[in-house]
Amino acid sequence: MTDSVVLFNEIKAANGKRFGVATLNAPASLNSLSVAMVRLLTPKLREWAADPGIVGVLLDAAGEKSFCAGGDLRQLYQTLLECGPERNEYAERFFAEEYELDHLIHTFPKPFLCWGHGIVMGGGVGLMSGASHRVVTAQSRVAMPEINIGLYPDVGGSWFLRRMPGRVGLFLALTAAPLNAADAIFCGLADLLVPHEKKTQVLESIASAPWQAEPQADRATLSRVLAQAGEGAGLPPSKLREHFDTINALMAGDDLLDIAGRLRQLHSEDPWLQTAAKTFGKGAPSSAALSFALWQRVHRMSLAEVFRLEYWASLGFCAHKDFAEGIRALLIDKDRNPAWKPATLEEITPAFIEDHLRPRGKMAPELASLA
Image (cartoon, rainbow, N blue to C red; front, top):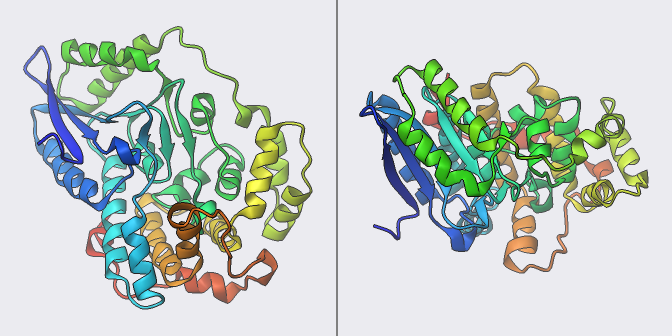
């Protein structure tokens, strides 16, 4: 079925081994990650992980614009309006199944190549970040823009943002700053740049490579294939690298109000940095507060522990009002004029933060069993 939201294929390698290919197939919605996609991907990836004839997996997307522009939030939005602070069973399924898939990619036992061409945002970063081999192209545009919709960088964002150099991850969570290929590599979200026009060459090399069905050796083989395809491809300048010291100074300390004060007073001749500060000023104070609270809490947590904490945080955001209001302003009415509550960081209390992070019902079984 060519109208399936995920297409599955296999590359037959020279020595009888096979490489699985999963293609997100919703280019009209910029391949936004839907529940239907997740429910196709997770069982297929488990099947490929267990198949001794499959030596690796490629995850890519249809169309030229976007790998994945984030989670598909429209159906979730309706349930936020209907459920309010009460139990939201759709949201429980939505987040549990998405995080289960993200964790599966992080822990996949074989080489896993993600081709992050074009827009890679939010849920798309969640898919890409856990792959063993993460390719960006000259056209890649990467971001975690959740502060604009009254959420926080989830999909494991609390884990991978905390592991970026210096305080870059906190800066990205608070400002939604857009990243190019060089930025993504610098902060650890991607591994190398391969020109998009070399993708056919990569597929041909995968077909002819000497796969051994031994994960460590096969990861090295895939690394060589990609390095050869990316040879000579120059990286663009990295704003993250250029402003690294400034970012660390802006994000210093253990008080979010201090950080907010520095961002509000920032005057930079670089439009990228100035826009980042402006985005923080317009973003949801609740998003900033919870992003900072998670940043402080997850430092020594395992990936599985972080996904379980994010599950409660996401259901907490569903029970409060800013998430629905952010989706309304950005995606539904598109007036880009959200009315955040609380309206300022100064109004946010420790109790407000704790209410976002407390358990709501039982932990989803697929997340409870993660190790």
